[in-house]
Image 1 (cartoon, one colour):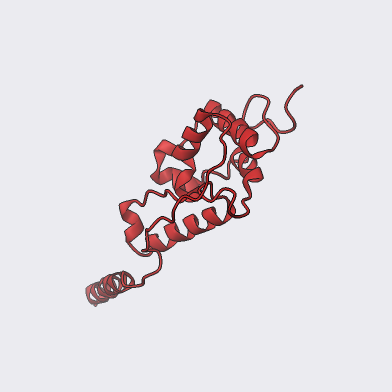
Image 2: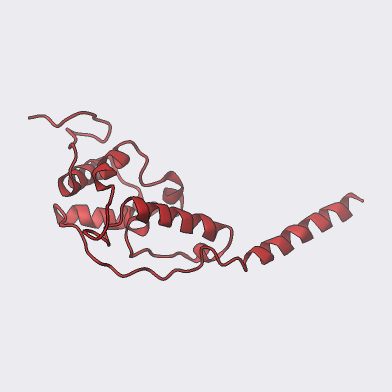
Length: 158
C-alpha cells in the first residue's frame, strides 16, 4: 500500500513538473538593447560591476541553462526584472535609476544577493574588492565612500 502511494505521489509530481514547463513566464531571454551607460569612475569598478552585478542590473544578462527550467526560470526572471527596475546601467540617461543606493546595498551585504552567489561563485568579492567596488560605485553614482572596510559606516575621513 505504501509503495503504491509513493509511486503515485512521484508520478503526480513528475507530471506537474513537465506541465509547468509549458508556462511561458521567465523564458524570454532576449536582452533589450543597451541604450546608454554611465561614465564609470574607473575601469576596475566597471569590471567588478560586470562580474558581480551586471546579470541583474544591465541589459547584458547571461542566462544560465537553469533559467530555462521552471520553476527556477520564474525566480531568475523575477530577480532580473526587479534588478533592472531598481538599477539598469544599460538604460543610463533614459529612465530613473536608484544608483545612489548601489554602494550602500553592497556595503550592507544585500548585493550581490546571497542566492546569486551560490550559483555564481565568480561574483563573490573579497573584503578589498568589496571596499573598492563600494567606493567606485559611490564615485560613479554619488554617495558616501568608505574609510577602509565594507563594514565601516559613516563619511570618509578627511
